[in-house]
Image (cartoon, rainbow, N blue to C red; front, side, top):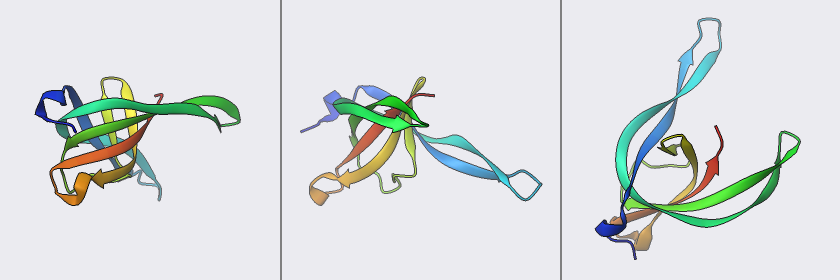
Length: 107
């Protein structure tokens, strides 16, 4: 099981912000809401079709201290790397560790 010594990656938790463009629409941008220590572990990979072309997919498990506010509409950033949150699980339902299955996306 993950422990404090394995939380060696400093990730930024981001959420999307929608801002009115003044013409009835909106623009979106990502805003950092917390910098967190986490364990980042590869969980597999594969291929899929995106925008009509074959694209590689890389899955990761990101484990961090439990937080109530992490949800699939968010993402993690590590420098230029982006990890979209697919699911967030309270490990053992003990509110101690949060395990997120993520997919790395290219910018």
